[in-house]
Amino acid sequence: MSKIVVNPVDSFSLNISDIAPDKSISHRSAMFSMLADGESQITNFLRAEDTMNSLKIVQNLGANVEDDGEIIKISSDGIKEPFEILDCGNSGTGMRLFCGLLSSANGHFVLTGDKYLRSRPMKRVTRPLMEIGAKFDGRDDANLAPLSIRGAKLKAFNYKSEIASAQVKSCMILAALRADGECTYTEPELSRDHTERMLKGMGADVVVDGLKTTIKPMKKLLNPLSIRVPADPSSAFFFAVAAAITPGADVTLEGITLNPTRIEAFKALERMGADIVYEKTDDRYEPIGNIKVKYAPLKAITVEDNISWLIDELPALSIAFACADGESVVKNAEELRVKESDRISTVVEGLKACGIKTTEYEDGYTVTGGELKSSVVDSDGDHRIAMSFIIAGLRSGMEVTDLECINTSFPNFFEILQRITEIKIN
Ligand SMILES: O=C(O)C1=C[C@@H](OP(=O)(O)O)[C@@H](O)[C@H](O)C1
Ligand SMILES: C=C(OP(=O)(O)O)C(=O)O
Image (cartoon, rainbow, N blue to C red; front, side, top):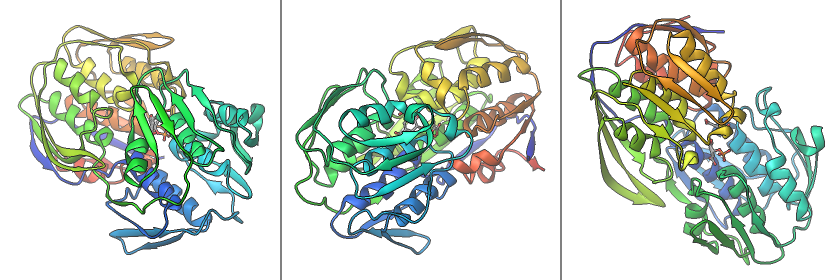
């Protein structure tokens, strides 16, 4: 159980060109390569625990994976029944998307994960899949992993989801590609759309019309992927907050996906008063570019719309709330309760320990800006909680414990952090 002591910094000016590659896109690159006719090539794949677990699963499912440390080449002649239990580690994205991919494959598959993932709800994917003929088993009526899947024939569907979840949407789109007719999936609010963009890029018949996606089953295998994974805005955001709460600081975050469903947290920080500039430099499956963030005095805001566009960034945004003038409010964010930790509780408890006034509600919380106090915060095994409170330490000093989880999404986080401040981990 490692811990870090962070000391306050005065100011910094930094260009960061090595923010971790995008986790969502990396998972999908590995998985979707299994649907292609020929060799897919992926560069800048995220070499973190969550995505390396997905890559290993793809290999266990019979794909040929060549990795020279820079380019990952994947080819597959169909999903094969594995000898191994498929371990998704800490990753909800891995488990839920593999449920969709495997529900119609030939064979028997067992998906498991670490103690955190085995407690997260899977019914949101197993229930709609079972309704169209998939065969799942698992604790609590196929709600909790380990999950066992027997590949089955899937019926066409028109599914209206009650949650804005890209994991559920992607799972159902993957199932639809092998269903016995045209399918539609409708979500209550647009969630991140990497799956639609990437599959369309590979030649799949996926049509998006507002909140409704229509998918025609694949008549033949898709074209291979050729992708350079952009940097992850969710990882970049920790350093955006670092600059926004440190008087005089500025940071340039390079090569980030500027997909609008992913940069809402930066827009929220902008609404709080931070000085933010977006500069598009590329377009491959999605817009990519640089984000510059400069300190300015912050004011409180309310966050209640398009919550799925900033759900992973809310813990870090809450550190900015704590440094802002006034009471910030988060609503409609009940999904935070079923992430790696119950992120409403972990954020609220962590901020309270730092002397910040907060109130917890079922679907959100309020944070009244004030003087952050140096404290000891445990991550509860949640990477985003660990990194958020480490960043808070740049303002006030902080000790954060249980840091191994950071390897799930951002293995070079500390390497970048030490360009800003001296750090001691033990
Ligand atoms: O599809 C994805 O890659 C993700 C979707 C989101 O989860 P939900 O679909 O549960 O909202 C997000 O929290 C997760 O980190 C990654
Ligand atoms: C919620 C997250 O990921 P996942 O659902 O894939 O575990 C996250 O990275 O914050």
